[in-house]
Length: 512
Image (cartoon, rainbow, N blue to C red; front, top):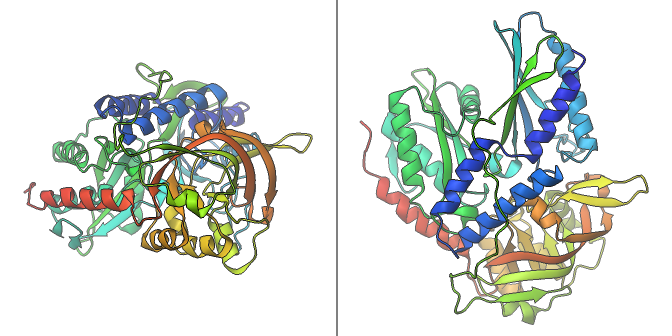
């Protein structure tokens, strides 16, 4: 199949840079129901701008291009060994071209393979069928939403909902709780794939398979169809909203599948996917490997027009817009409060898991006193002259740095941290004691923020790999919202409390 490698390259690039039509329509519906002028509405405007920028630039929608999972159906006698080689080569080329971030890391050494190829990556599932063409579907699921996957073993006590039994109503409670526990850390508003039954492994696999269904697909099982509709309605009353800022749109899609199980086991597994739902497919000629048609591109393609950002109506009498440029003083930070919009000019320094772990035991490669750390693992590309450019640079889920963040801010004098999804009580306490602030950027908006980066001033600790290195970036007009301030206030804590209260109203049995 002389065209297979090229076809797989096109599939990878298109999936990384261009959202499918059904997902675009779901995001458009969310925009229409959100209240104008709220933080959630402003976030959705940024998200839709980012979608169009990625499409136009043919660049990654989100900097975390995720775990690539290929579901491949082939006619009998197709050489699967050769197909796997071509898929690997397509992934290598897409990574080299800056369409994918190098995400394959050795679990024992932490070494990044640099090309997204390694034991278990990418994931490729083959299945034979009796049709005369090849069907290949690809999903790119980022780490932020992958970490919000959750599995329940029934019966169980569910936070806010009480006892969940081994019945349809117990399943209902698990799914509602899965939405609550994701908050903004999975880049809400999101999509759910749910697997009921099986064993621990097959239950999760069934959940992920549901994400390959079209958003508007109707479940053939009437009871599951009713449950899907119920979850969509009730989840959007929890008030979590886009990015966990509060709002009307929390869930964009829910698909549920079931399989038989052992009498002793009853698993409910949930695969949570962010708004950047990168999932496409192609049908190929089985002899040549050429693309015959694309999947998930039926119906009208929603194109989002750039918007003039309206004035925020939330806390409009008190919130303000503040420009910061490092080095930032403690006095500047203590003047900020939750709800303020911060515009950053000057230098940002990236730092993710490896950097935070390193800084706990080592000195920093630069003076970080008064500086701003950005939880970001960018997609970078080096030209022939050896100069780096930023291809995508949205925020990483911050909660992973909770064990380190407060200690590192105090140790090095860091005054501000940018990420997504918020952080926990340890960091909040440190912000108050030290005089620091947490700034929430819009998760997944990798093109929007890359456009704010005017130059790459250097890089340190490249031994950790491109996503985990410390990049020194000069930015202009980089906007984020104060969601945790130096006075003990946290928007994330407030939304969590409110959404748990709303979740609790669904304790009573609904499905018999």
